[in-house]
Structures are given as C-alpha cells and as structure tokens.
Amino acid sequence: MKKRVAAVLLASAMCAVSPVSAWAGGDGGYSSDYDEDSGYDDWEDDPDTDYEYDPDPDIMEANTLIPEDLRVSPAKKTIKKGSSFTIQVVAAGGSEFDDLSEEEWYDIYERSVDSIVFRSTKSNVASVSRTGVVRARRRGSAVIKTTINLSCGDSVTFKTKVYVKK
Image 1 (cartoon, one colour):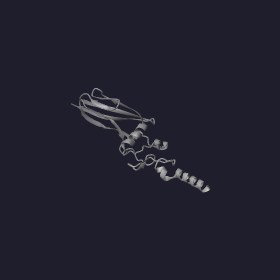
Image 2 (cartoon, rainbow, N blue to C red):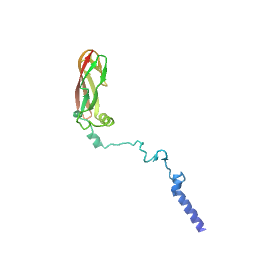
Image 3 (cartoon, one colour):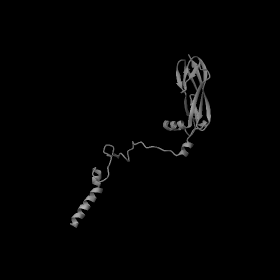
Image 4 (cartoon, rainbow, N blue to C red):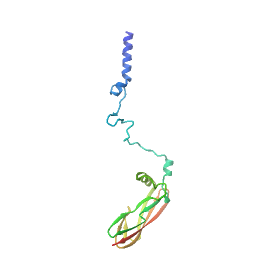
C-alpha cells in the first residue's frame, strides 16, 4: 500500500509542475501567451509593446531650451497678396537640439515653452494669427515679432520680415 500511495503522490506532484502540462494549458499553474504567428510571448518579448518611459528629472532639466537654442523660420519671406505661410519655432543651427528627431524636439519644446505671442507691425499689410499663420493683405512690408516665453522664466523675441507683392 505504501508503494501505491507513493506512486500516486509522485504522479500528482509531477502533473503539478510538468512542463508539458504547463505549455499545453494544463493544470500546472502556468499559462503561456505564446503567439505562434509572431513567435513572442505577449507578456515578455513583443517588440510592438508600448512601455512607459519615466525619464530622470536631472536629464529632463538638462534638456530644456534656453533662448540661444531657438530661432524662427523663415527670417524673411516674400509672398503674394492673398497668400499665407506659418512661422515655425525651430532649433538654432549648431545647438545641441539641432539634430533631434521631430518627436524628440516636440517633447523638449512642449516641456520648455510656456507661450508664444505673434504680433505684426503692420496688420493691414500682413496679419498674423495666434498660431503664427501670416496672411498677406496688401502690397508693402511688415515685421512679424515672435516672442517666446520659456518655462525657465526667460523670453526671446525674433523678427520675420514679410514682403507682400501683387
């Protein structure tokens, strides 16, 4: 009887941890989300899985913009009456942010820029919207002043010279 009890206990113990029962979805206490199409376990190695990124605050502070890192584009523009263009804030040539991808630049920009104010010196020649869209109204020239207020407390103003022709 002792041999029979030992055999039953041994058999049940093997079923509880058997790799075959685990991978086959048995009662081994394990479950696998192995996807035969992709070859990845859903819970572990899938390269398409999005992971949260929690950056180091010291690195985040080091990667904030200062006035010398910025410029506007274009610096001057000639356009026809009735047409429009948008002023963009970009990284200054030669700055550490000049070679960033669009996504990296946007992240740093969003973290560093509190507000932007656009103003035209001659709204009847070239008007500008709150988002930086410049519209040519009539022949002449105007200057669009772009003031960028940074989260560090600094601000910087750039000028875009606009020439409107018929």
